[in-house]
Length: 212
Image 1 (cartoon, helix red, strand yellow):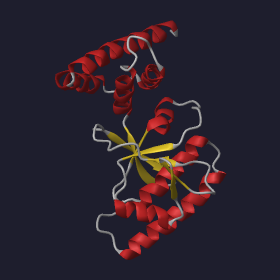
Image 2: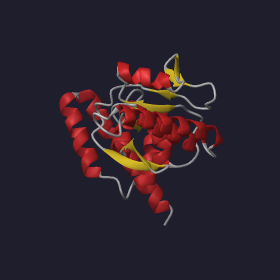
Image 3: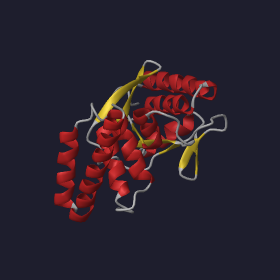
């Protein structure tokens, strides 16, 4: 299981029991975000490698506010043995998602997460889970915003929300360096990301001045 490398059968059984208990808490949770975070904790207990929370759940965590209902996204994809462990607690695959009949949320594993370089630890029900850093989430959103650039799309709006909420604490030198690396590897995409980053930061500064 994810809590210990090379854990024993006793540890594995304990983790499954804890995961089952966490899954039972999910329908009673007060908010959609809390439900998804509890599911992240349960899945973390089950997988051989601690997954990283990404997607809409990470956006809601970093930007605050209520987001449209969304499922939990975790990276990386589970191993074949992990899939058996998920099934052992009653989870089953329906389309792209893993769910259970008594759960109001489902989990998807959309990719490898190889582009994630920074994570933070978030404690939920006294269990640590991994969350994508606000910087890497922001970089992912401005990359997605290149699809329609220079027209602004929903990914641009979400990058702006992350920047507005975390502007004073974000590591902008790290963001700049990652964009420079992208320009070297993917010139067209990286150049667009640089332009989107400039527009987002300019807009955040204007909003900040307007609030003084």
